[in-house]
Length: 320
Image (cartoon, rainbow, N blue to C red; front, side):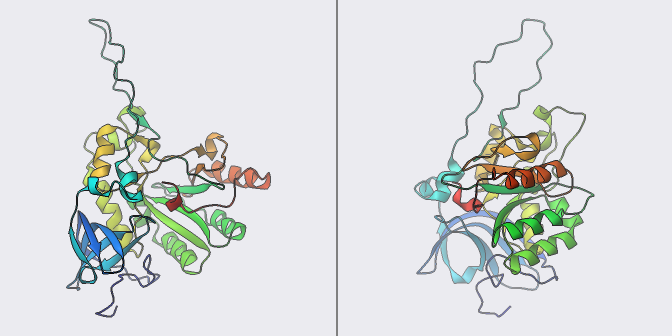
């Protein structure tokens, strides 16, 4: 990279080179930045081994697009999230999602204590406006290979087909060849990928109920789940988006407020295809591309053949 180049990745979003970067520092920040022409919001600062410059992960507060640029290319100052409420970005990050009723019936005296209730299931944006729909494919940890045939079929369906990939850090580290293949599809103009943070460990205990599972499991380190995933994304050549999907679609008010503090926008679903849910105009569809749920991919193709997939597919940035 040239010394006077602002962008970390030449196209702003990804680097197709196979050689990985090494991040020595990644911090959550909130800064209002300007280069005299463009206004951006910095949500992360990072340092890269063998480079003297600090970089910022920048968000366009209206389009929600992200890119990583050198600190010296912008003048930045701290800002409060509340001061961004009139932007698409600020409004989406600070949006409050409904909690369950507070007046829950109390257990009779001496009765066994009731298990804690799941506060929020499928919280976050699950629909967008207009015609068409939004395809999201989760990449949870899996020993199975990426469902490349599904993505190849998607490429034939629509030019530069938009798809949002919910990437868990452990999946990425275990499937570097598949990840490189996805990057190549983007570089060749076959796919338009939005990279969603899906937590690093994506913890799940099959012996526990949902109300104490996933990121609600004891010992979950929220900071690691967020920043370590972004670290491995950037080190392997892609720019994280402003979106986050909770593992299992399970969260609570505490987790939602923690997510706000990292300036991330929660994404739910309107139609989980393997669960036989029907998509409509504006639906955020959910499938799994990691080999763990082929039924959803088969159903997508069946619905597509029956003209029951609302088209065109739209990029996730149009949802909020």
